[in-house]
Image (cartoon, rainbow, N blue to C red; front, side, top):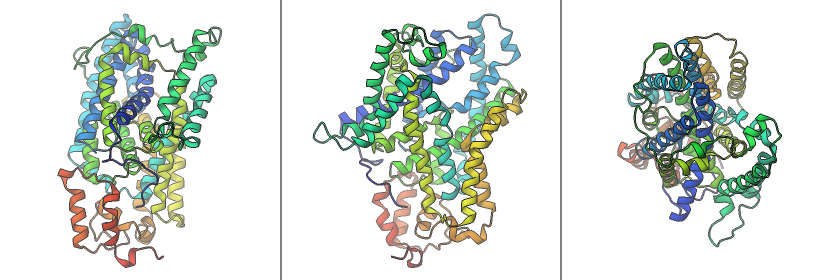
Length: 528
């Protein structure tokens, strides 16, 4: 598998410490968009106050920081930032609409009881993720993921959130459009311009620079009264003082287990929440594959992928931070670990964290336009490892991409009229996720449609040995792939190093590609 070009730092190489700290802070700023948006949307509907909202945000930040650190140390060990997923919104709304909770007259008490019900559903649903991960069940299932099957999934990981992009930018064009233009200008047109001798700051820190400039610009517009007589929706999107996060945040508060009281359990709530767990697993799988490619790491073997699913624990791999790896050309694991430290630090110092959390969402939406698009293009790049002159492959790719966008749109249009119940919410959660729909369609078709006749098309001969030994870890005589791997001392040595559990299965591809390709049989190489 060919490496991406122009990456400065791969997974095991680290920038200088000052640069690493700034890059870590940049990752922290970027993940605030999703982390703030989900509680800001749900907590008021539960009956929570502004103080409750900031406390949920702080707790989410703390949990994301812990999970990011654990994932980078013991999970997939990829530079993956973990955070909240929109997959959990549908089950949480279903719990909020429970009649026993709606009958509670006091808003704060209703908020507490709702949080306890959500806690109970999450505790039980997490057992499914633990079983899938630590039992290696997901790893066994992932052996059916060929490059052709994963390309639409990774593409939909980026394209599936298009509604979080320009539609949100359009809610406040005064700051959204300048943010988008400035980000593209600095990161692409001025990326080679160096104000300092060795650091291309516009390429390394485009998010930090653009967010700082446009945030100050939005503060000036808010203070100058530019939005005083605008519609409420515009004020909510543009103003920097609408969220009331800073005034409501405590100076110091440490999150702790069961802080809203003892959890309550309900079978219907758990069934709906398990669907969100499955969606999170599918979306994270695509994001891990994209992160490994952008960080020039070997594609995670089945057991590493399964272990990462077990460690992620009810959070998801944030797609925007995966895109940032490519935008900054830095795939260092240490940068992500530093960002986890910022998450934990600012989650306990509420006032300081709330300052950054008050950034208007259209600024993040402009970032998503670039970063989600970059993740989608990484997915499309996986098609180079298959024969795209094959009509079978074209049908699988096109149908997976189209249904991955079309089916969620149908379920979104019929969401309010589709009824109410745990099984109904289970289906809504599954089929509202574009990557999950794409995974179901592409993997099913790829493993059932003309399998015997398409051996030469599913994986190109020049990359067949690499994908067979490392990506899928399939037996060498597996009839689904067109190459026969001839064992040799070089392959055995490299395969042992890559697949040794003590080594966590993660090494820069540059360190081993020469030995691997030198051991590919002559008949499986591309003619010159």
